[in-house]
Image (tube, rainbow, N blue to C red; front, side, top):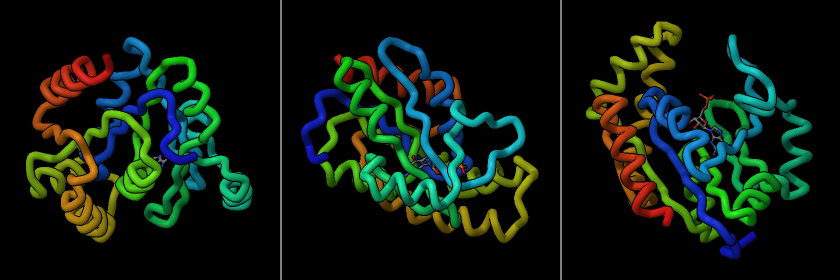
Length: 188
Ligand code: 5GP
């Protein structure tokens, strides 16, 4: 699929721990926004439901789907595979809806290469120190995992050229208001 998309995507990306999931939850169901549920090979976390948070697949099932061209984009992140099911996005864009994709940067790069039209938003932390504090505050990551995520975040922050907008998540309410304002102007 190259550049023939009929509709627009809403692509939200940014480092792990920046708060993009909270923003995406708040966007769901507004107007014609429909959340795309990704497939992943990582194990469900407590409270996550198959088909709602992710489609949890074995590596074999993921690779089989990928080989059949079933993903719009996919990436390996922290040892697990993640991908956006193509069928959902094609169906929803054709119906005039705006699929909301919360994905990491390698996936964004692929969508840009394919020429998918859309609104590409990068959610940035106020600073790396702030991001570290947020990751530490989650209380569920050993220091070396936090340091690895910080390294990845530093690399991601260098790829803001891939996006149309960068929104600093200083407070969720303000960042959400800014994202809504952008979508309001761009999804006409
Ligand atoms: P987590 O394991 O914390 O849920 O997600 C890890 C990272 O993978 C996050 O940055 C998340 O946005 C990203 N991600 C989730 N689904 C997809 C997907 O379908 N494609 C890509 N490229 N990244 C994804």
